[in-house]
Amino acid sequence: GMFFLVGVIYERAHTRDLNEMGGLYAILPVYGTVLIFTAMSSLGLPGLNGFVSEFLVVRGVWPIFTLALL
Image (cartoon, rainbow, N blue to C red; front, side, top):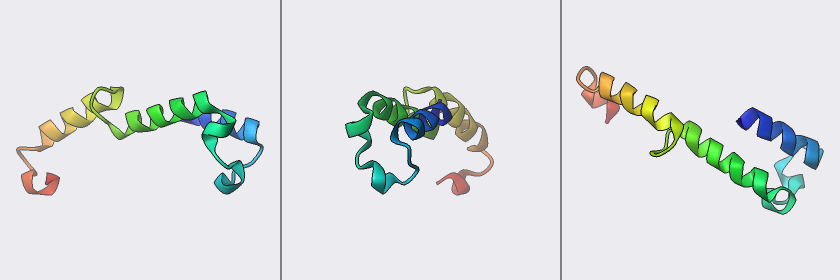
């Protein structure tokens, strides 16, 4: 999802320099919102699709490497 959105933003803005874009919301407000949502999802925030896998990894590793996870 994020690769698709970055491609769309590049095609609309015709630049890769973030300073030249000005503000993403000024050019593409809907795509900017979806890009932020997908970025937060890939970070594993609770309530989004990446959280379950992150939680299961931490839960599985907790008994073995407790100090490393803190």
